[in-house]
Image (cartoon, rainbow, N blue to C red; front, top):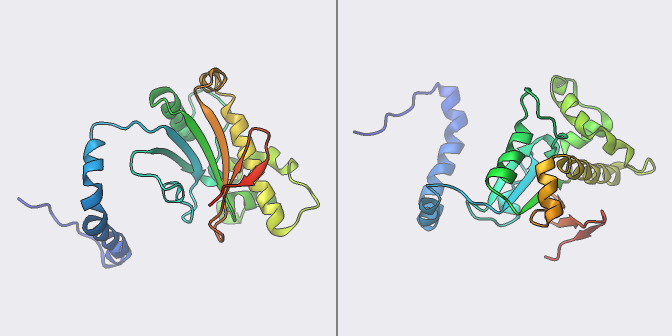
Amino acid sequence: MTDAQPAFTKEASTSLDALFDGYRRFRAEAWPELRKRYESLADGQAPKILVIGCSDSRVDPQQILGAAPGELFVLRNVAGLVPPYAPDQAHHGASAAVEYAVRVLKVERIVVLAHAGCGGVNALLNGAPPEASDFVVSWMGIAARARGAVDPALEGDARQQAGEEACVGVTLGNLMTFPWLRERVEAGDLALTGMHFGVATGRLRCCDGAGVWAAVPA
């Protein structure tokens, strides 16, 4: 018995062609080398690192950080934000991912990965487009205080980058409001790190505990 072929409209089939082609390349080129690794992961995962990054299609944490399948637990959303700890009955997708990574998987490091040209940060600094008013505006309100951290004398790309770095600081600060996360940080068995990726340059920068940004040697 063979798998049934999915039935799609002509328009849907056309839009899926690239995805199916990519899958075929994966099976032909990557799967032979990765098969044993995936088989070893079939019964569970044990990543040591949680990466909180942006949903932006240009910024793939696994690719940028050269990680293999199973090495990173990844949370991606607009601008890579995490709200403050608020254990109520509302839906908290970002907080749920943090809880699972920290309390269940016991990750040892959390990386907050920002990037150049972030549309979410641009919306925070300059206003969101009308089409993004239902959810993006409210979501970026999590990082409202980042605006005050940006030097008003900055303009253009410098202002944008300062906003991206400030949003990393907001997320790092919000993470520390989770009591069970703070306990692990203070016990020395969980570390928090901020990073920033230059889309045009391919360069990665890292933020130390004092909030100073420096390039990671290539």
